[in-house]
Length: 113
Length: 117
Image 1 (cartoon, each protein chain N blue to C red):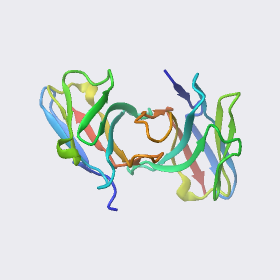
Image 2 (image 1 turned 30 degrees about the vertical axis):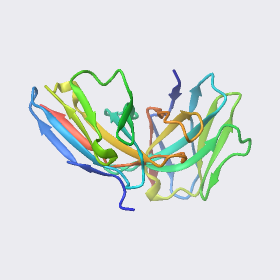
Image 3 (image 1 turned 90 degrees about the horizontal axis):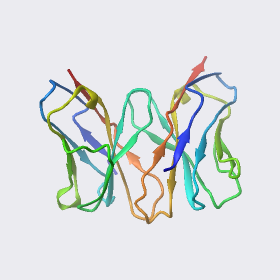
Image 4 (image 1 turned 180 degrees about the vertical axis):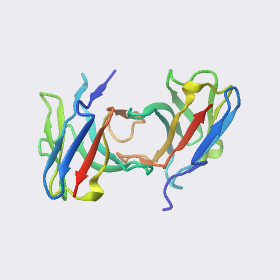
């Protein structure tokens, strides 16, 4: 069990650029979640995958955001045409079916300048 | 939608003393779970303690215990014998349904705990 891995840890990008983040969950965890955490706030749900199927998306996930989980393994979160309001910590979490809690990754901190 | 409220943005405690962090939530559901997560600076969130709503007994994990008041929709975390390593942001979280469901977590805004030596 190597934990949930997120890359990169930090990303600085210019407004209008596209960025992509990667999450590698714990291997036997079939459920994967993306959350966004802004400064001074708790994480807010973005989207959920069960295996490769994206089963729920938050209204926070505008059409500039897209997430994938090919083959039910790692997941990517892409933000197109970034805006300053996208600056946040993007957290990935995974869990095994039938278990209560998540295992979180360390997050990717995005700064849009 | 469910809401989770943490009314204490920041708290301080002396090392070896006891501190209680407050959390209230709003829900119309009867089957749910409550959690406290700890987020140290620049480090990942880790689960501190979990409470099932159907259990009357308060959960305890070593120095960490909760006071779960279902009727009042209150879920406070007590940290006994505080240690320097307890300094972190603490988030209260709610999720509904049994473990098999995919239901997302709702998090409070967090309480920053400072531990003074």
